[in-house]
Image (cartoon, rainbow, N blue to C red; front, top):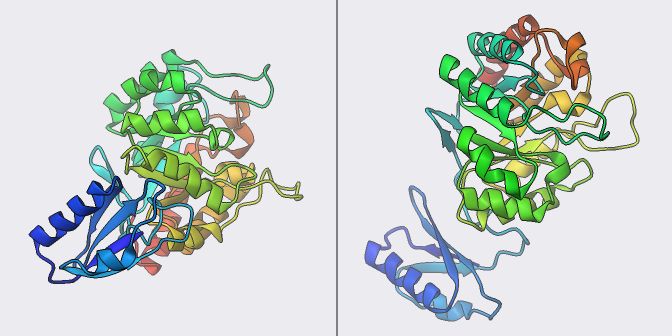
Length: 337
């Protein structure tokens, strides 16, 4: 349920309404807009008398939220969420570009890439420290050594860093180094991990599972939000279909649909979606035109030598050209880059 207060409701009336709801054993979430204050109500399983709520002073109306995701719903939180991270913001008018290698392979490789993407206009540096791979014989990442290298790259470039966390036990370690925790597609419904990153109170980039519906993605986000962690970013990274000419099928319709259903920012990963560097640029431009709040792109100075996902990685020069090509598209849709 959401309780919509009148436009002239006083602070005392809002506080009284909040106290009344919490006295029923429910949890409240306050969303204050320019004209209305909305109180989101998460129940405890017992029915709430909506008519009784509507009789209280300052209340305009009470509305049932029918969707299973509550905290992620735009009904609960009509204004777009903007996630602040170390001087930048994800969501709002400015677009955010996240770039870097799929895996941290060495100090030289990471620092070369970090400097290149920073100069090209990236806002956040990505790099994998722990890699959940399909084959147990594939490169699994450098672990904590990679985290230390990412922290060094942050010191040298000023870019916040994002890296994937693959188990609840690793959350404390990764939060020691990373500015943003990434939950990968294979872990979207790892509920123990979702609880752990929610409790960390660190910004979380949540990738859509390769066979997940949009509702399942939003329900996964609900796990994180239920711990009071409001800094959640959704990521469309392609879904598995019968098509085999691309790694996955990029569902660009998910961008406007998710933004209609939810207040959370939405970014697109064209690298994993296509699996081919030749398609990354066109899909990046299409994502911005579709309303994405940003992109996460894999960049490697020598993709032919990459230990993971070299086929979908852009070289630094092509990445710089891509960023330039996005500027007129951003302007055309009322965004900035």
